[in-house]
Image 1 (tube, rainbow, N blue to C red):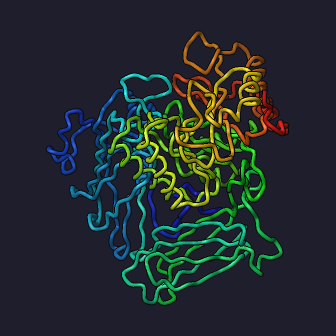
Image 2 (cartoon, rainbow, N blue to C red):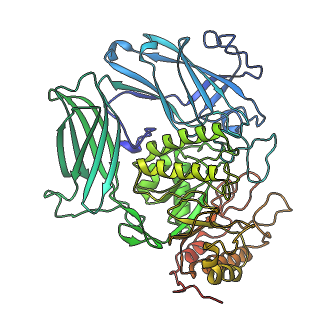
Image 3 (spheres, rainbow, N blue to C red):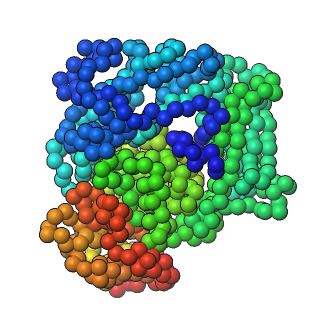
Length: 598
């Protein structure tokens, strides 16, 4: 894994032998509150303003500005130095890992392109717009409080409210340059087929002609040779299967990926023109299988009990943007130290280097889409386009075991009865499955499910005996919509039936300490560590005794602005000893073997 740990912004597909440049750092910056920059052609003559530290948004202290008020149009500018003479046969791409929401790019005054969406990555080929020497890069970003754009936990009012926080406007993930050969491997899709001991590979090849073009694939495990394949490239999408349990590797067998043993294979790609390499890229993969078997979720053929924690990925000084890579690693280490084997990454697509470290360290991830908050044609279009970008971009990460496009009827407020909203969720389910038929998809996490591979419930009752009363005796009735489990919400939408899927309590807890009524948690606040642990123990132990439940997700990793119900404060200090939380989480699951009927 040497190459991926060098700070490369896209660890799932690296070109370490080619030039790349991180553009994070100081940029020129201006607000455009009168929206006059386009008419004033600021991409030709950038106005005097201030500096901002990219990739932190102007709302954050880490940006150097720290202004939480609303500014819908903002501009960025910087220069880059280019030596075109050395790279005349290559393409130069400018990559944005994330910019919220409508981003336009100009290079030397010429329009390079635009992208809409706050959570997916995007790129522009700027080769035709650059010249030798200094080049001007100008970026305009337009955001809004529009409820039809996927915004997740970003507020749409002037002040924070409920569980919605300061908005994120503009560039909030790394920006970087990459030189790419004219003929190159554009993307790869890797699918482990555990039952066959094979890896399915699909490569997207960008070339002028395919005659004389070959693709070479080399797979190793800890520098030991596994297999090497060479196939002719006859069209844009080239597919092949690699035998991971090969003759050369038979002495080791097959190393599978799991939280206990996160084995990763290295894979190198070479594009050959008449036997000579014209492009080289590297990646990695995990051999693992996640599937549904009745009421169980199986990882590599064995039942998986998921001990998840809700992770919103906010930091005090940088909000949605990780302050640095060490902060991502620290979060994962502290989560695992508390006995959790996974996270539900809530209403956010995290920096890909988080997913990389989850792959390396063995942390399970539920990947969740940022919600819209209205239902209309624009919201459907915005949501669908960006969700599928995210699924395609993060498909290769073995740590991602579940897709969660919808949460608590946000953006689909009448899904219980409205057939149009139900059909929308069904369409997203099937569209996701068309690209990824292997991972479970949860449609409407928490309640009012339509079609869904897993049924999930949210409940913040405070007492363990209340969990036992509700789910130990009445879970079957809840799943039949005979009684409501939470806030008058039914488990399924009208017209849908429980069909024996696995059931997970995917939100509970949210315990907050009393701090003079500042901030909030779920239920009554506790006054001591002893009270916290007693309540945490009671509700977690009760959940683990309920036989039909195959996992849970505690709210949450850390405090977020006004929401103070984290296991850690927003500076990542534990509120209670993690070893005590770990002991409770890792106690054996002592299930009731059947649901009791009264």
